[in-house]
Image (cartoon, rainbow, N blue to C red; front, side, top):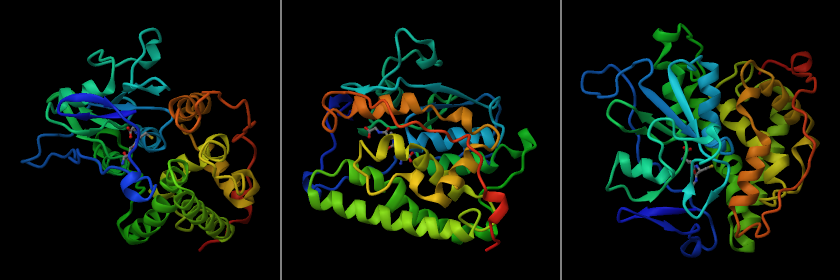
Length: 323
Ligand SMILES: N[C@@H](CCC(=O)N[C@@H](CS)C(=O)NCC(=O)O)C(=O)O
C-alpha cells in the first residue's frame, strides 16, 4: 500500500494522524467521460476502452456489475490485478495468467498511472477505465464509470436499460449520499480508524444505517421502491463482503448481515440476477483484505469461515409492497 510522489512509488500506509484517527478517502483524479461530443477526445467505440479492476474492491466491483448489466463484455475488455496488495501496491502476477496486464505487461498498477501521466501524484487505485488509443486514464472514479456504462454504449449494444432514470435522479443522489458515507465508506472508516473514538463513531453510523435499511426494505422491494436503480448496485457490493470481511476484519460486528432478514433476502435477489454471480469472488476478496492490511492483521491468516450461500431462495417477490 502506498502512493506516487515525485514520479516514484513510496510504500506508505494511510495517514490518519492529521484527522484524529479518521480515514479520509482521497478524491479521484481522472474524471473524463466518453461521448461523441466534438471537443471530447474519448469517442464511443467498441474495443477502445479497458477496465483494470481488483475482484476484492467493492468500488471496482460496481463497474464489473454494470459491464454485465449493460452487456458490455465485447465492448470493454478487462484486466484483473492479483489479490494481494503489498509494498508495491496493486500488482500483476508473474505466474498466473488470470492476473496480468493484458495491454502492456506492467508488473505494478502504479506503472500504468505513470504511463498515463508521468506527473501524477497520489494513491494508485482501482477501478481504472483506460483508453487504448491515447494510452491514458479516462476515469478512475467508480461512480462516474457506472454512469458512463449506464448509457454511453446503448446504441452499440441495443441495451437501453436505465439504472439512473432522470425522474429518479434526485432521490437516487440523496440515498447514494447516505449509503456512501455510512455504509460503503462507513465500513472502511471503522476498519481503518486508528483511534477508539473514530472507530466507534463510524460503527454507530454504520449500524444506524443498516437498521434503517432493514426497515426500509421491509416495505420497499428496492431502495427506490419497485425500480431497481444504480443505488441498489452501489450498495450491493459492500453487503456481499459484509459477513466474510467487514464483520471480522473491519470490526463491524454488532450483527452479521445474515441476522437482518430483509437485507439478506434483498442481497440474494440481486446476486441471483443474470450475470451478477460471475462478478463475485469471495475467496480472492478475503485473501486481499486479510493479507494486504498487515497493520490490521499482522499474521496474514485468512479466516476459514463463514459459510455463505447467496443462492438460497429469497422471498422478495412475495411480500414486497410498492412504495
Ligand atoms: N473513489 C474511488 C475509490 C477507489 C478505491 O479506493 N479503491 C481501493 C480498493 S477497494 C484502492 O485501490 N486502494 C488503494 C489505495 O488506496 O492505495 C472509486 O470509487 O472508484
